[in-house]
Length: 114
Length: 115
Image (cartoon, rainbow over the protein chains, first blue to last red):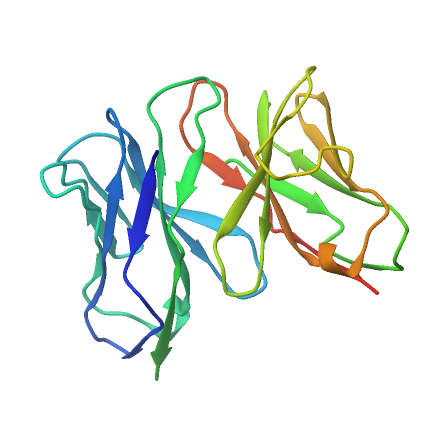
């Protein structure tokens, strides 16, 4: 079945540091890939997405490129801010079925120090 | 953008009572909504997929008689936790998908505490 693997956390960075959060996936067909962010006490917000190989999703300074050859969708940001402190989830949407379901990674907590 | 609301945001109830959580899509019609449960510091666990006008599809291991889902309109799905027990305490999150699109939009979640 489909699966998403995220790097182990938590991650603590200083403000303005470079961020990389690794995400790899296993899926049949051609899934869509997503990054969601969850701020403390809140639900999930879509951060960015990519629907086909070599697509780059970007939002709020975050970027991720859909790499089919390495089955990866790593999240990057050049300069993090304290306000980026949150839990980040990588997810994929299987490409088959009207009720195709999101499969989430375990999530990783990012803390950014001033 | 697409907005999904949940009500209540927080509820505390006594063991044995039932609790209803509402999920509404505010600016779009959602033929499909999803209900998730999230344990502390863990990922989201899909409980069921709710389609408007039909019975929900429950994931393996989720008791459908305990977690009643109703999707009576294109903008509203409800989750009722029946005869709640302390082990049902959790963060419940719903999401909705715009027909034909692949993105799910999530509600802000409901924190349920059963005493």
